[in-house]
Image 1 (cartoon, rainbow, N blue to C red):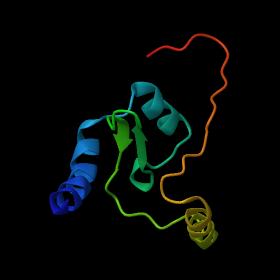
Image 2 (image 1 turned 90 degrees about the horizontal axis):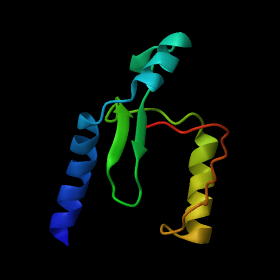
Image 3 (image 1 turned 30 degrees about the vertical axis):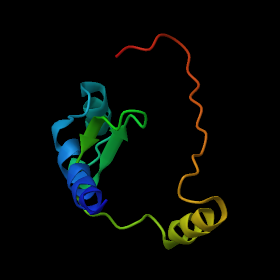
Image 4 (image 1 turned 90 degrees about the vertical axis):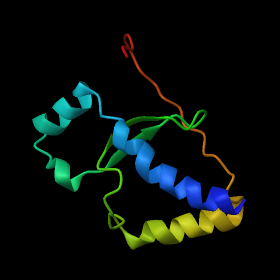
Length: 97
């Protein structure tokens, strides 16, 4: 069990380094004139744990607001760490990989 606590954080830092964002994501960042150094993205398949895309995944970031920390704490207390929020994706057209 102790080994898991050591290897899991290490994996969290190493695995995203090898998943480059798709060109469409890079194009959107460039088009909207977003400074890539000020942006961090990690897209992960929750079933397999595979990181699909990442950009600056290990760069420390300040939360957008402290209110989110209080909200996250309340949600953890109420629902527990294993709770999963359902998310639905709606789209029109054809999905391309």
